[in-house]
Length: 464
Image 1: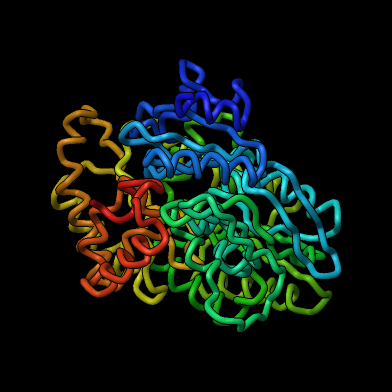
Image 2: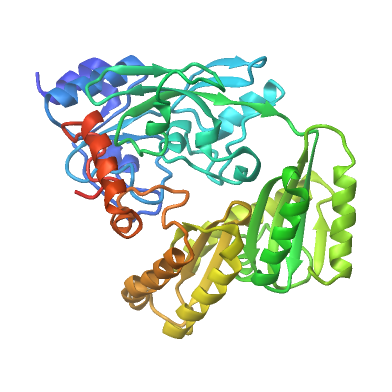
Protein backbone atom coordinates (compact mmCIF):
# COMPACT_ATOMS: atom_id res chain seq x y z
CA UNK A 1 0.00 0.00 0.00
CA UNK A 2 1.12 3.53 -0.70
CA UNK A 3 1.37 6.07 2.11
CA UNK A 4 -1.87 7.73 1.01
CA UNK A 5 -3.63 4.38 0.95
CA UNK A 6 -2.39 3.62 4.46
CA UNK A 7 -3.62 7.01 5.69
CA UNK A 8 -6.97 6.37 4.03
CA UNK A 9 -7.22 2.99 5.73
CA UNK A 10 -6.57 4.72 9.05
CA UNK A 11 -9.07 7.61 8.90
CA UNK A 12 -11.35 6.71 5.96
CA UNK A 13 -10.96 7.56 2.28
CA UNK A 14 -13.23 10.63 2.43
CA UNK A 15 -11.02 12.15 5.12
CA UNK A 16 -7.80 12.13 3.09
CA UNK A 17 -8.01 15.07 0.69
CA UNK A 18 -5.85 15.13 -2.42
CA UNK A 19 -7.59 17.40 -4.97
CA UNK A 20 -9.39 20.72 -5.11
CA UNK A 21 -11.13 19.93 -1.83
CA UNK A 22 -7.85 20.85 -0.12
CA UNK A 23 -8.10 24.53 -1.11
CA UNK A 24 -9.34 25.89 2.22
CA UNK A 25 -6.48 24.17 4.05
CA UNK A 26 -3.61 25.30 1.81
CA UNK A 27 -3.42 29.02 2.53
CA UNK A 28 -3.39 31.14 5.65
CA UNK A 29 -6.24 33.48 6.63
CA UNK A 30 -4.62 36.51 5.00
CA UNK A 31 -3.71 34.62 1.83
CA UNK A 32 -0.02 35.48 2.19
CA UNK A 33 1.27 31.92 2.44
CA UNK A 34 0.10 29.23 0.03
CA UNK A 35 1.28 25.67 -0.40
CA UNK A 36 0.64 22.34 -2.09
CA UNK A 37 0.49 19.69 0.60
CA UNK A 38 0.84 16.05 -0.33
CA UNK A 39 -2.50 15.49 1.38
CA UNK A 40 -4.80 16.88 4.04
CA UNK A 41 -5.80 14.31 6.65
CA UNK A 42 -8.76 14.79 9.00
CA UNK A 43 -8.59 12.25 11.86
CA UNK A 44 -11.48 11.95 14.33
CA UNK A 45 -9.68 10.84 17.49
CA UNK A 46 -6.41 10.99 19.34
CA UNK A 47 -5.78 7.38 18.38
CA UNK A 48 -6.20 8.19 14.68
CA UNK A 49 -3.85 11.18 15.00
CA UNK A 50 -1.26 8.94 16.66
CA UNK A 51 -1.61 6.28 13.95
CA UNK A 52 -1.18 8.88 11.19
CA UNK A 53 1.90 10.34 12.88
CA UNK A 54 3.46 6.88 13.19
CA UNK A 55 2.91 6.26 9.47
CA UNK A 56 4.38 9.60 8.46
CA UNK A 57 7.34 9.19 10.82
CA UNK A 58 8.08 5.76 9.30
CA UNK A 59 8.14 7.40 5.84
CA UNK A 60 10.06 10.49 7.04
CA UNK A 61 7.28 12.74 5.72
CA UNK A 62 6.80 16.16 7.29
CA UNK A 63 3.66 16.90 9.31
CA UNK A 64 1.89 20.25 9.56
CA UNK A 65 -0.58 20.37 12.47
CA UNK A 66 -3.61 22.54 11.72
CA UNK A 67 -6.72 23.57 13.66
CA UNK A 68 -9.02 26.42 12.57
CA UNK A 69 -6.32 27.85 10.27
CA UNK A 70 -7.05 31.42 11.36
CA UNK A 71 -3.38 32.22 12.02
CA UNK A 72 -1.68 35.28 10.57
CA UNK A 73 1.96 34.15 10.31
CA UNK A 74 1.82 31.04 8.10
CA UNK A 75 2.27 28.61 10.95
CA UNK A 76 -0.22 26.02 9.68
CA UNK A 77 0.54 25.84 5.96
CA UNK A 78 2.68 23.22 4.26
CA UNK A 79 5.92 24.43 2.66
CA UNK A 80 7.49 21.39 1.00
CA UNK A 81 5.00 18.64 0.28
CA UNK A 82 4.20 17.80 3.89
CA UNK A 83 0.95 16.22 5.04
CA UNK A 84 -1.43 18.53 6.89
CA UNK A 85 -3.15 16.91 9.87
CA UNK A 86 -6.22 19.01 10.58
CA UNK A 87 -7.89 18.38 13.96
CA UNK A 88 -11.31 19.92 13.23
CA UNK A 89 -13.02 16.54 13.66
CA UNK A 90 -11.62 16.23 17.19
CA UNK A 91 -14.49 18.37 18.43
CA UNK A 92 -15.83 16.69 21.56
CA UNK A 93 -16.16 18.28 24.96
CA UNK A 94 -15.27 15.24 27.03
CA UNK A 95 -16.17 16.60 30.45
CA UNK A 96 -17.22 19.72 32.35
CA UNK A 97 -16.26 19.57 36.03
CA UNK A 98 -18.16 22.44 37.62
CA UNK A 99 -16.86 21.73 41.12
CA UNK A 100 -13.25 21.82 39.87
CA UNK A 101 -13.88 24.70 37.45
CA UNK A 102 -12.38 22.80 34.53
CA UNK A 103 -13.37 21.62 31.05
CA UNK A 104 -11.79 18.67 29.23
CA UNK A 105 -11.99 19.64 25.59
CA UNK A 106 -10.62 18.37 22.28
CA UNK A 107 -8.38 20.42 20.03
CA UNK A 108 -10.90 21.02 17.24
CA UNK A 109 -13.58 22.70 19.34
CA UNK A 110 -14.17 26.35 18.28
CA UNK A 111 -13.73 28.94 21.02
CA UNK A 112 -17.31 30.14 20.62
CA UNK A 113 -18.57 26.62 21.32
CA UNK A 114 -16.39 26.27 24.41
CA UNK A 115 -17.63 29.62 25.73
CA UNK A 116 -21.25 28.66 25.07
CA UNK A 117 -20.98 25.30 26.82
CA UNK A 118 -19.24 26.88 29.81
CA UNK A 119 -22.03 29.48 30.05
CA UNK A 120 -24.62 26.68 30.11
CA UNK A 121 -22.88 25.51 33.29
CA UNK A 122 -22.81 29.06 34.74
CA UNK A 123 -19.09 29.30 34.17
CA UNK A 124 -16.80 31.46 32.02
CA UNK A 125 -14.40 30.07 29.41
CA UNK A 126 -12.15 33.11 29.38
CA UNK A 127 -10.27 32.80 26.09
CA UNK A 128 -11.94 35.09 23.55
CA UNK A 129 -10.74 36.36 20.16
CA UNK A 130 -12.26 38.21 17.23
CA UNK A 131 -12.15 34.89 15.35
CA UNK A 132 -13.86 32.91 18.15
CA UNK A 133 -16.35 31.36 15.74
CA UNK A 134 -13.66 29.70 13.64
CA UNK A 135 -10.50 29.63 15.80
CA UNK A 136 -10.11 26.29 17.56
CA UNK A 137 -8.74 25.48 20.98
CA UNK A 138 -5.78 23.42 19.76
CA UNK A 139 -4.47 26.20 17.55
CA UNK A 140 -4.86 28.76 20.31
CA UNK A 141 -2.88 26.58 22.69
CA UNK A 142 -0.22 25.92 20.07
CA UNK A 143 0.29 29.67 19.60
CA UNK A 144 -0.36 30.68 23.23
CA UNK A 145 -3.05 33.07 22.01
CA UNK A 146 -3.95 36.10 24.07
CA UNK A 147 -7.15 37.80 23.02
CA UNK A 148 -9.16 40.45 24.80
CA UNK A 149 -9.29 39.00 28.33
CA UNK A 150 -5.57 38.67 29.08
CA UNK A 151 -5.74 41.52 31.55
CA UNK A 152 -7.68 39.46 34.08
CA UNK A 153 -7.25 35.84 33.03
CA UNK A 154 -3.83 35.73 31.38
CA UNK A 155 -2.83 34.25 28.03
CA UNK A 156 -3.83 30.74 27.01
CA UNK A 157 -0.81 29.41 28.91
CA UNK A 158 -2.31 30.57 32.20
CA UNK A 159 -5.62 28.83 31.47
CA UNK A 160 -4.32 25.38 30.50
CA UNK A 161 -4.43 22.89 33.36
CA UNK A 162 -3.50 19.78 31.38
CA UNK A 163 -2.67 18.60 27.86
CA UNK A 164 -2.84 15.51 25.69
CA UNK A 165 -0.11 15.54 23.02
CA UNK A 166 0.91 13.16 20.24
CA UNK A 167 4.70 13.09 20.02
CA UNK A 168 6.80 12.88 16.86
CA UNK A 169 7.00 9.06 17.07
CA UNK A 170 3.23 8.66 17.43
CA UNK A 171 3.22 8.03 21.16
CA UNK A 172 0.60 9.84 23.24
CA UNK A 173 1.74 11.96 26.18
CA UNK A 174 -1.17 12.21 28.64
CA UNK A 175 -0.76 15.23 30.90
CA UNK A 176 -4.46 15.86 31.45
CA UNK A 177 -4.69 16.12 35.23
CA UNK A 178 -6.83 19.20 36.00
CA UNK A 179 -4.57 20.35 38.84
CA UNK A 180 -3.69 23.93 39.70
CA UNK A 181 -0.77 22.92 41.87
CA UNK A 182 1.56 20.06 40.94
CA UNK A 183 5.31 19.95 41.61
CA UNK A 184 5.94 16.39 40.37
CA UNK A 185 8.92 17.11 38.17
CA UNK A 186 9.09 19.29 35.06
CA UNK A 187 5.86 20.93 33.93
CA UNK A 188 6.09 19.38 30.47
CA UNK A 189 2.83 20.80 29.16
CA UNK A 190 4.42 24.26 29.12
CA UNK A 191 6.85 23.10 26.42
CA UNK A 192 4.00 22.45 24.00
CA UNK A 193 2.00 25.60 24.72
CA UNK A 194 3.20 28.18 22.21
CA UNK A 195 5.42 25.72 20.32
CA UNK A 196 3.25 25.95 17.16
CA UNK A 197 3.19 22.22 16.59
CA UNK A 198 6.96 21.91 16.27
CA UNK A 199 7.26 19.66 19.34
CA UNK A 200 4.00 17.67 19.28
CA UNK A 201 0.37 17.66 18.13
CA UNK A 202 -2.09 18.85 20.75
CA UNK A 203 -5.24 16.71 20.70
CA UNK A 204 -7.01 17.69 23.93
CA UNK A 205 -6.68 20.01 26.92
CA UNK A 206 -8.07 20.51 30.37
CA UNK A 207 -8.92 24.21 30.50
CA UNK A 208 -9.65 26.32 33.56
CA UNK A 209 -13.12 27.78 33.96
CA UNK A 210 -14.01 30.83 36.00
CA UNK A 211 -16.96 32.30 37.83
CA UNK A 212 -19.22 34.31 35.57
CA UNK A 213 -19.13 38.02 36.37
CA UNK A 214 -22.32 39.24 38.04
CA UNK A 215 -21.99 42.45 36.05
CA UNK A 216 -20.06 43.41 32.95
CA UNK A 217 -20.04 47.14 32.29
CA UNK A 218 -18.64 48.45 29.01
CA UNK A 219 -17.17 51.94 28.65
CA UNK A 220 -15.92 53.98 25.70
CA UNK A 221 -13.39 56.57 26.89
CA UNK A 222 -11.87 59.28 24.71
CA UNK A 223 -8.67 61.23 25.38
CA UNK A 224 -7.11 63.96 23.26
CA UNK A 225 -4.30 61.72 21.97
CA UNK A 226 -2.64 58.36 22.51
CA UNK A 227 -0.04 59.66 24.96
CA UNK A 228 -2.79 61.11 27.15
CA UNK A 229 -4.72 57.85 26.88
CA UNK A 230 -1.70 55.83 28.00
CA UNK A 231 -1.33 58.05 31.06
CA UNK A 232 -5.02 57.63 31.82
CA UNK A 233 -4.84 53.84 31.39
CA UNK A 234 -1.87 53.66 33.76
CA UNK A 235 -3.72 55.54 36.48
CA UNK A 236 -6.84 53.46 35.88
CA UNK A 237 -4.98 50.17 36.31
CA UNK A 238 -3.16 51.40 39.40
CA UNK A 239 -6.49 52.24 41.04
CA UNK A 240 -8.95 49.68 39.66
CA UNK A 241 -6.88 47.09 37.78
CA UNK A 242 -8.60 44.12 39.41
CA UNK A 243 -11.95 45.14 37.94
CA UNK A 244 -11.02 44.98 34.27
CA UNK A 245 -11.02 42.05 31.88
CA UNK A 246 -10.45 44.14 28.74
CA UNK A 247 -8.70 47.42 27.93
CA UNK A 248 -8.56 47.93 24.16
CA UNK A 249 -6.96 50.91 22.42
CA UNK A 250 -8.82 52.22 19.35
CA UNK A 251 -7.15 55.26 17.71
CA UNK A 252 -9.28 57.66 15.68
CA UNK A 253 -8.03 56.32 12.34
CA UNK A 254 -9.08 52.78 13.33
CA UNK A 255 -12.53 54.01 14.33
CA UNK A 256 -12.99 55.83 11.03
CA UNK A 257 -11.88 52.80 9.00
CA UNK A 258 -14.29 50.53 10.87
CA UNK A 259 -17.21 52.92 10.39
CA UNK A 260 -16.36 53.41 6.71
CA UNK A 261 -16.24 49.74 5.83
CA UNK A 262 -19.04 48.39 8.04
CA UNK A 263 -22.22 50.42 7.59
CA UNK A 264 -24.10 48.77 10.47
CA UNK A 265 -21.80 50.29 13.11
CA UNK A 266 -22.87 53.33 15.11
CA UNK A 267 -20.41 56.12 15.96
CA UNK A 268 -19.95 56.37 19.75
CA UNK A 269 -19.89 60.00 20.92
CA UNK A 270 -18.70 62.98 18.96
CA UNK A 271 -15.11 63.46 20.14
CA UNK A 272 -11.95 62.75 18.16
CA UNK A 273 -8.73 61.44 19.65
CA UNK A 274 -7.64 58.13 21.12
CA UNK A 275 -10.36 55.81 22.38
CA UNK A 276 -10.30 53.07 24.99
CA UNK A 277 -12.80 50.23 25.10
CA UNK A 278 -13.09 49.04 28.68
CA UNK A 279 -14.95 46.14 30.25
CA UNK A 280 -15.24 46.19 34.03
CA UNK A 281 -16.35 42.88 35.56
CA UNK A 282 -17.58 42.12 39.03
CA UNK A 283 -17.79 38.59 40.35
CA UNK A 284 -19.02 39.55 43.83
CA UNK A 285 -21.26 42.52 44.69
CA UNK A 286 -19.20 45.41 46.02
CA UNK A 287 -18.89 49.16 46.00
CA UNK A 288 -16.07 49.06 43.46
CA UNK A 289 -18.23 49.92 40.45
CA UNK A 290 -19.65 52.97 42.21
CA UNK A 291 -16.14 54.12 43.06
CA UNK A 292 -15.02 53.55 39.46
CA UNK A 293 -17.88 55.64 38.07
CA UNK A 294 -17.09 58.44 40.50
CA UNK A 295 -13.42 58.34 39.56
CA UNK A 296 -14.19 58.46 35.83
CA UNK A 297 -16.35 61.53 36.42
CA UNK A 298 -13.45 63.16 38.27
CA UNK A 299 -11.11 62.53 35.35
CA UNK A 300 -13.52 64.39 33.07
CA UNK A 301 -13.46 67.34 35.43
CA UNK A 302 -9.65 67.20 35.51
CA UNK A 303 -9.54 67.11 31.67
CA UNK A 304 -7.48 63.92 31.65
CA UNK A 305 -10.10 62.51 29.28
CA UNK A 306 -12.60 64.38 27.13
CA UNK A 307 -15.48 61.89 27.07
CA UNK A 308 -16.72 58.80 28.89
CA UNK A 309 -19.63 56.78 27.49
CA UNK A 310 -21.12 53.97 29.52
CA UNK A 311 -23.00 51.43 27.44
CA UNK A 312 -26.62 51.53 28.64
CA UNK A 313 -27.69 48.26 27.01
CA UNK A 314 -26.34 45.01 25.61
CA UNK A 315 -26.96 46.39 22.13
CA UNK A 316 -24.84 49.45 22.86
CA UNK A 317 -22.03 47.32 24.29
CA UNK A 318 -22.21 44.98 21.31
CA UNK A 319 -21.80 47.95 18.97
CA UNK A 320 -18.64 49.06 20.78
CA UNK A 321 -17.18 45.57 20.55
CA UNK A 322 -18.22 45.29 16.91
CA UNK A 323 -16.15 48.41 16.21
CA UNK A 324 -13.13 46.85 17.85
CA UNK A 325 -13.51 43.54 16.03
CA UNK A 326 -14.06 45.26 12.66
CA UNK A 327 -10.69 47.01 12.57
CA UNK A 328 -8.63 44.22 10.98
CA UNK A 329 -11.11 43.56 8.20
CA UNK A 330 -11.56 47.28 7.60
CA UNK A 331 -7.81 47.63 7.16
CA UNK A 332 -7.84 44.79 4.66
CA UNK A 333 -10.55 46.53 2.64
CA UNK A 334 -8.62 49.82 2.77
CA UNK A 335 -5.58 48.36 1.00
CA UNK A 336 -2.28 46.74 1.79
CA UNK A 337 -1.42 46.58 5.48
CA UNK A 338 2.02 45.86 6.96
CA UNK A 339 1.25 44.20 10.28
CA UNK A 340 3.37 44.14 13.42
CA UNK A 341 2.22 42.12 16.41
CA UNK A 342 4.34 43.56 19.21
CA UNK A 343 4.33 43.93 22.98
CA UNK A 344 6.05 46.49 25.18
CA UNK A 345 6.39 47.33 28.87
CA UNK A 346 3.33 49.37 29.82
CA UNK A 347 5.52 52.21 31.04
CA UNK A 348 6.97 53.00 27.60
CA UNK A 349 4.05 52.48 25.21
CA UNK A 350 3.32 56.18 24.80
CA UNK A 351 6.99 56.96 24.11
CA UNK A 352 7.25 54.11 21.63
CA UNK A 353 4.16 55.21 19.70
CA UNK A 354 5.28 58.83 19.60
CA UNK A 355 8.87 58.18 18.55
CA UNK A 356 8.13 55.35 16.13
CA UNK A 357 5.35 57.37 14.48
CA UNK A 358 7.71 60.32 14.03
CA UNK A 359 10.36 58.10 12.41
CA UNK A 360 7.84 56.41 10.09
CA UNK A 361 6.31 59.70 8.96
CA UNK A 362 9.76 61.11 8.29
CA UNK A 363 10.43 58.15 5.98
CA UNK A 364 6.97 58.14 4.33
CA UNK A 365 4.90 61.24 5.18
CA UNK A 366 1.66 59.87 3.74
CA UNK A 367 1.68 56.64 5.75
CA UNK A 368 -1.39 55.73 7.82
CA UNK A 369 -0.49 54.22 11.20
CA UNK A 370 -3.20 52.09 12.80
CA UNK A 371 -1.96 51.16 16.27
CA UNK A 372 -4.67 49.34 18.19
CA UNK A 373 -5.19 46.45 20.51
CA UNK A 374 -4.64 45.23 24.01
CA UNK A 375 -3.32 48.28 25.82
CA UNK A 376 -3.89 46.72 29.23
CA UNK A 377 -1.26 44.00 28.69
CA UNK A 378 1.07 45.97 26.41
CA UNK A 379 0.23 44.07 23.19
CA UNK A 380 -0.29 46.36 20.19
CA UNK A 381 -1.20 45.58 16.61
CA UNK A 382 1.04 48.27 15.19
CA UNK A 383 -0.12 48.19 11.59
CA UNK A 384 0.92 50.39 8.69
CA UNK A 385 -1.80 50.96 6.08
CA UNK A 386 -1.27 51.81 2.47
CA UNK A 387 -1.39 55.59 1.85
CA UNK A 388 -4.47 56.62 -0.11
CA UNK A 389 -2.26 58.34 -2.66
CA UNK A 390 0.07 55.37 -3.25
CA UNK A 391 -0.37 52.22 -5.33
CA UNK A 392 -0.17 48.90 -3.52
CA UNK A 393 2.98 47.69 -5.25
CA UNK A 394 4.82 50.93 -4.50
CA UNK A 395 3.86 50.59 -0.84
CA UNK A 396 5.04 46.98 -0.76
CA UNK A 397 8.47 48.09 -1.92
CA UNK A 398 8.77 50.20 1.24
CA UNK A 399 7.74 47.33 3.53
CA UNK A 400 11.25 46.13 4.53
CA UNK A 401 12.44 49.62 5.45
CA UNK A 402 9.23 50.46 7.31
CA UNK A 403 9.32 47.22 9.29
CA UNK A 404 12.98 47.81 10.12
CA UNK A 405 12.02 51.14 11.70
CA UNK A 406 9.30 49.48 13.76
CA UNK A 407 11.52 46.58 14.85
CA UNK A 408 14.36 48.90 15.85
CA UNK A 409 12.05 50.93 18.07
CA UNK A 410 10.41 47.86 19.64
CA UNK A 411 13.75 46.35 20.65
CA UNK A 412 15.11 49.71 21.78
CA UNK A 413 12.22 49.97 24.24
CA UNK A 414 12.67 46.40 25.51
CA UNK A 415 9.71 44.86 23.68
CA UNK A 416 9.07 41.72 21.68
CA UNK A 417 8.49 41.35 17.94
CA UNK A 418 6.28 38.27 18.44
CA UNK A 419 3.53 38.96 20.94
CA UNK A 420 0.28 37.17 20.18
CA UNK A 421 0.11 35.43 16.82
CA UNK A 422 3.21 33.29 17.08
CA UNK A 423 6.28 33.03 14.85
CA UNK A 424 5.31 30.65 12.04
CA UNK A 425 7.00 31.43 8.73
CA UNK A 426 6.51 35.17 8.77
CA UNK A 427 8.56 36.00 11.84
CA UNK A 428 11.16 33.28 12.22
CA UNK A 429 13.96 35.51 10.87
CA UNK A 430 13.06 38.09 13.51
CA UNK A 431 14.11 35.69 16.25
CA UNK A 432 17.73 36.16 15.19
CA UNK A 433 17.40 39.79 16.27
CA UNK A 434 15.55 39.09 19.50
CA UNK A 435 17.11 35.90 20.88
CA UNK A 436 20.63 35.61 22.16
CA UNK A 437 22.81 32.69 21.08
CA UNK A 438 22.33 30.61 24.24
CA UNK A 439 18.54 30.93 24.15
CA UNK A 440 18.41 29.88 20.52
CA UNK A 441 20.75 26.93 21.12
CA UNK A 442 18.55 25.76 24.00
CA UNK A 443 15.43 25.94 21.84
CA UNK A 444 17.19 23.98 19.12
CA UNK A 445 18.27 21.31 21.60
CA UNK A 446 14.69 20.87 22.82
CA UNK A 447 13.46 20.57 19.25
CA UNK A 448 16.06 17.90 18.43
CA UNK A 449 15.24 15.94 21.58
CA UNK A 450 11.49 15.80 20.93
CA UNK A 451 11.59 15.69 17.12
CA UNK A 452 14.91 14.10 16.09
CA UNK A 453 13.80 13.61 12.47
CA UNK A 454 12.61 17.19 12.18
CA UNK A 455 9.22 16.17 10.76
CA UNK A 456 6.93 18.29 12.98
CA UNK A 457 5.95 21.55 11.27
CA UNK A 458 9.38 21.79 9.60
CA UNK A 459 10.75 25.26 8.96
CA UNK A 460 8.41 26.97 11.44
CA UNK A 461 9.57 29.05 14.41
CA UNK A 462 13.26 28.14 14.15
CA UNK A 463 14.63 28.88 10.68
CA UNK A 464 16.66 26.04 9.16
